[in-house]
Image (cartoon, rainbow, N blue to C red):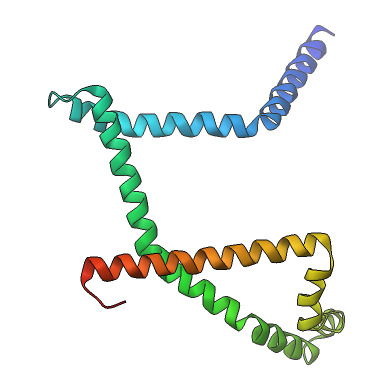
Length: 166
């Protein structure tokens, strides 16, 4: 009987820990990611500090270089991603109609699903008639404008850096 009580208490304690980790998952993720960042950057800060630079300045320099690296990565990789996103948004209505037409001629399952597809214009307009749809449409509009602005900034920086006309 003691064994059953022991196993039961271990299982309940494990479930309680899993439940608490799930409840505080964002805090746990933030804590673990801060440990990872600190462990990755510590050798770099130590090597800079070994050259008789104050530890605070070494840390600031390291964070500055990491931010510059991330910005450069976004600038150089962001362009192709931005052009792909623009292409997807441009081709979405045509692709939707092609899939709808092909599924009407496809298997019985595809045909059944395609019969329940709304028209693309009706689907797009239904987003604007509901509150959540208005939110989604506003979010997509802001995202599109932000991506366009990021593309313009990227093109401007690239033209300044490389001497390529805007």
